[in-house]
Length: 459
Image (cartoon, rainbow, N blue to C red; front, side, top):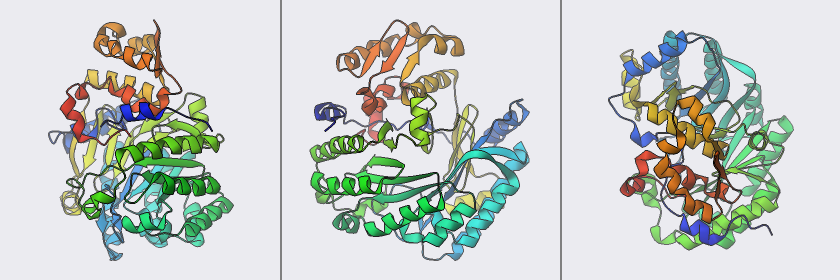
């Protein structure tokens, strides 16, 4: 059996840290950044000479039932008529956005997240996609994905999704063990998922992703090994393996989880270590962070070719591009700015009723932020830094600017996680499993230890 990384190293780096879907991270957003700042960013983009394709994220918050582990922005309801009202407001938001940067811009990446996007009926999904196509141009060869709760779709619904233009699916599985499913209030038989993945392959979806979570109540290393064996038999194109972060004071549904039933820290590390070994032995490529892919999948190919990118949805094959975020709580990026919509439906609807974009907070990046973002994303995506390229792009002396950070890398080097040279820094194969900890060295906001407590643990 392949041993990806020693368990003692995983234990050593079992500390809180950001996921770096952005830098600075969303906890640094401020309410002083509002709609006028966002509009200015949109208009600056419009004035630019390069009309690069956009990424588009649409947040659908509704779920019929609550999954106790969930930390997403969601609205639990069985009243499906609420979706029609939400779609009307989404359309208003798009109209306001387009008024500032123009219609017909190309989109190379579209993602419907939630909540449960498949809470929408086929007709509502059709209306949503028609609205998007009226205002944007989905370019050939793009990634068009949707998150799917297996309990909400049939073979026929999957065919509808393909007809609407989606070419990638992400199934929320988390765990196949019936006792664990019951403990987190998400019961879905493994046979149901196997049947849907088989149907998706026959229909011709380019990629099927499966989400897993380790660290849930009643999980043990033995029970999770059984789930991994089933996943390897299912053989999805991509796997996202997340660590459960128990934060009941921040996320109300998690208060229904019995803390005594959570696995120990040692068992969580054992689950991660065994997962890495099992998935690598099954032929999956470790892309980075929580992502695995079959060698033929576009994500694994992008890693081999040094073309990985990272955005608010995680790793991506699409070039680093501006992200238009639509819907309640959605986070976007335009140029050197980040922005977030109102987090409640009431606030979201109220802003749009007043003819305003529902931006409630965000951030305009400083020169130092942009520099550190480039460094952190190079580590997270390419696993290496070439000092000269950073120096030329940002007009700095790298070794002088980051003298303190580079001094702290000697410990990583001794542990075999990075290799240092006069011209750069390279993450080793073992270091890839702890790339989050390596990137954290360049995060100026984490230089005070107590700031780390706001994040989930790396392991």
